[in-house]
Image (cartoon, rainbow, N blue to C red; front, side):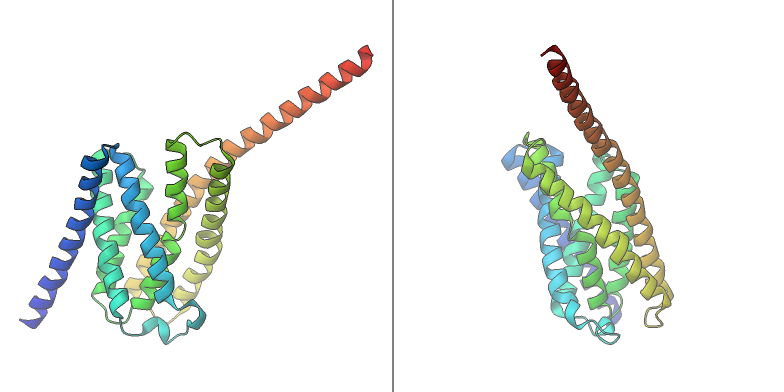
Length: 247
């Protein structure tokens, strides 16, 4: 009876979290009269900002040890799991409804939901989850800020390019370099069980898919920018040579 009570309490809390995120989205959609994607991005910005800050605070980066990674869940870490589960469930359904996101994003949300369900069923994964969610979400506010700048018509501004470049560099550094190192350490560690290692690899593969998409975007956009710059520079040089010859 006690196990069933705990299970129903957990399910109820997750449902409340999902309804709160959905309610916030609907409130924005009705009150602001913005597009569905604008409202979804605003919700995502809120989740990413809070998840990154709380995750970093609860990760205890300066004191990470073999023991701290398997310490009993704190209240903040437990609350963060419910906070994120409701968001990922909401955004997963939103993506299915509007289908404006890629398969990679759907896989990311699905893996995140499965991972949180797994972490909630264990009593010693709070620090691991906090570090994971911080690593995954710390660049999210930059991504959403970039979208809002573009949506507002500032996609050619200096601020837009600074936000975009910062996001791209941090994403590749955190998920590509640091993420690879952490996955390597987790796979070699005997602290984590097979389920934790499997979900870690799954999230890592999703991150690699994002990195592949980002590299394609960078090559397409910034190689064109470089070609345009070279073309302008070549034209200016040609004009100056012509002027000198005429003189």
